[in-house]
Length: 127
Image (cartoon, rainbow, N blue to C red; front, top):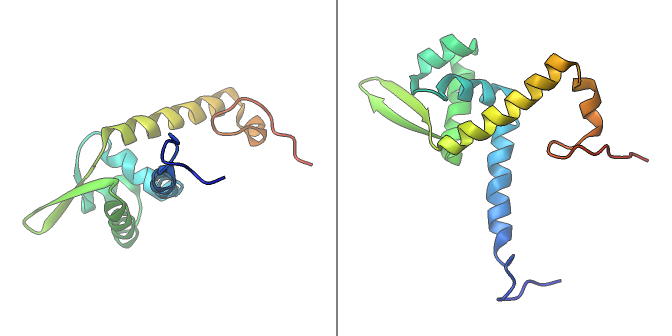
């Protein structure tokens, strides 16, 4: 069904595509590791490498993608580049999901999660 001008969902496709790009960036564990390092304060590439245990090449590649998507901001100081999370809501979202999954691991519920959606609590029947 085509969206009409009075349809409140008209134009939402663009929003959904943008949200999907943001979540796609967060679907990579290495990027979450980087965000974990810079969620409290900005850090240089070298600091991120040291804290994350990742290679400088990998960190730089992920930071560039995250910068292009608008997840992180950067500033140059001399020869160093410092990165920070561009939107504090992103930190809150990641922290909420990480805390929930971490709690499930601690309770031993992680194996049960396979049948649940990320948000919902209802098991999905697979036929």
